Length: 127
Image (cartoon, rainbow, N blue to C red; front, side):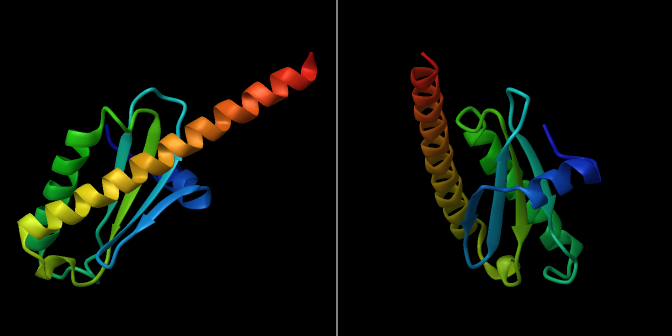
């Protein structure tokens, strides 16, 4: 599923506790109220001039997202492309994207475990 309207994008931009960064892209993420991940892409013409290159980036990002979406349940993710991303080969780009997805998954799991610990401690203090 994709982030489509500006209010969904703005929600993630305003509050994105999960972030991973790389020379070629930035991932911003936050938990959503759905039980499925949603992806938003920001690939500016300023950073990647040719439409064919922008479309290639979108395709590769979506492909890697689909492969990881089971592990990303319940979050909204925005991927921002940076300059120079179009100079990288598909193989290298897929490798880099997979590393970023794995980093985001680790951060998501850590955040979920911290939420469970804080929920358990608040339940214990209520008794």
